[in-house]
Image (cartoon, rainbow over all chains, first blue to last red; front, side, top):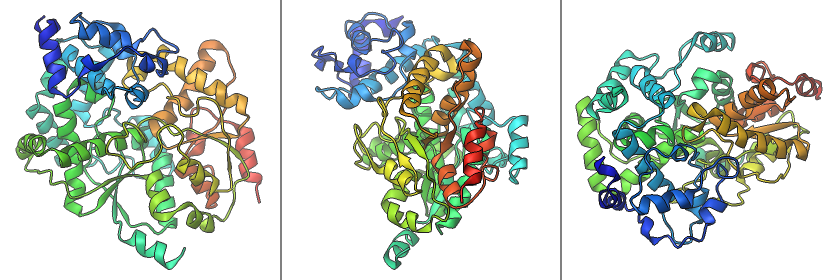
Length: 164
Length: 306
């Protein structure tokens, strides 16, 4: 996989302005990580591996980051750590490495324009509250939904989510 | 409300961005928001035809170009109305405010996004602001003016949950403290309630970044910790400003009870539901009884108040 080649990987992170080479390994990121308190996510270690060009694309902890931004806010070197995680995740998804539940969420967006679309139970709840069964979003405006679908196709997001 | 406060907020015409989780999972929050906006005499119309923001953790992780294209389309809808956009979800606020700020600051990025929007005859101009209901109420209406409008003060103890994306990433945001903010607590206390401090108050609910959707056990580990801190503090309910945190803290209690045989039963309210109670609306009118975690004692306490 080309993207796991160290220099390509770093140059892509660098292009986003995310200079993970500035890291001095103080560990504030890992110490501040609420996910790391309960899961095996070690942010400092994850980015250290990425910096060395080791493959982190299949590292399961890549997806246990809740993107709370504690690490990024507190990093004394001002590294945009969560932005780096986003970039690594995006490279993984491009290479087809994506959890099936996440692909499902992406497909829901492509089909409905909502990552969490309406269902029968909530139509009933809306009506019980005296509201329209459908909200005034893309759910009520077919033209708006077509626009969203066209835009997602223009970004090739539909293809990205359909690659099995 | 003072004349000057009224004039001030008349300048801020808004459109209401609903997102996904509120209209499609917690419609009571949508209704509560509209009741509160009406009571506060805030000029706010539905942002018709809006889509998913799209979600700042999960969808931004997949492809940044798509994330920017879809968020800028939503922003272009409010630009067409000449109104600032009001969000009632931390995730929607995070995505839309960050996209808006990035695009306003970077001409090349704006050009690139507009090349996608051109396919649907739209354009991002960068003429409007994105607001979150808590910082909007705090800065434009102010807690003291809200307190004056409260008809049924709430004598309850509240665990405030800020959530992450309301405040972070802080770059480009409104300048509230990330580590120890107080504006949300002040809004909660304007209803007569007491905001009770608790350990790890600023910690994540566990849902964000796609963790809830694909790694629910990991998400629940964070939720369980957060709930245990809140339970030790002895509160009547949790108040949040984000339907995704709301869902994680509400459905998370049911999930933990089913999995572990625990008896978590803390009512979870969005701020607009708390404010709605203080304006005299009922639990049913605000859809608080449509949560997954139902606490009869809390409902009775609310109904019995003067």
